[in-house]
Picture 1 (cartoon, rainbow, N blue to C red):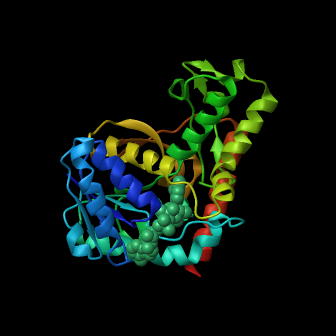
Picture 2: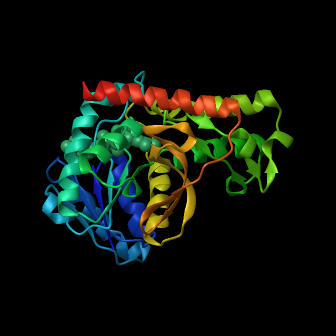
Length: 306
Ligand code: NAI
């Protein structure tokens, strides 16, 4: 199989490495900057003998080279600078993502799309609109990353192995995300049995602020290692038809009382893309948080379209 990554920046190039080194697919890295994706591809190809895989990695500035891809991941666009919110990227990235989605679908009409560019939920909505794809085949990555951050902070707090912590974060990718603490467990034991309310609330806040914390530390762009890992998990579940249940930004059609908006909810991902959307029995406050989060996405969709 072949995966195209539009945007060979830090998230895109790290994702190319993950996909090739996990031996999942051949990769086409596309960027507008001339020479840069070609150089990165060559560098990744030269690591193959050491990393022991035989995947092709091609760098290009031309969409024709992406044709016949099973999956297209869009990471093209600007990342945040310190003090910026994801929403500050709205107009610039909207143009880039819509153009990328249209170009990519023209060359790979059967592809499944994963949007990564921020503000994530709005960009996924715009890409869905621009491609005219059924919702099963276009989704956004945010929840897997936000959940991994929540799990990390829980693991650090309790001094346990990160792999033993399972948690899910729903909602939009931003300050209004909805970490579901009452579902979070350490090997099946709810964290509410292990941590007091104030501590859980502190970890939830750190999760909401997880992206900004890294932007402030680095000062030049944002996180990319964990975002690339999170995206590769979605790519893997689709390519290997694993049917993993992952928080995924998807176009809602009445689920959770929401429609005509993109937001993160649990979805099963397999070879056709989104196999189904799972509707949880949320509490009143969780539902309210999800609706507040959806409302802010709606406002930004309107702003992007002005
Ligand atoms: P970056 O600046 O390293 O890479 C972006 C790349 O896009 C650059 O190489 C640039 O040349 C390219 N690009 C710009 N316009 C293009 C166009 N029209 N066609 C093709 N390529 C184009 O940024 P980074 O750190 O890789 O982040 C990429 C995006 O992903 C940002 O919007 C960032 O906010 C977002 N992001 C989203 C996450 C999520 O959880 N959904 C997590 C991390 C980042």
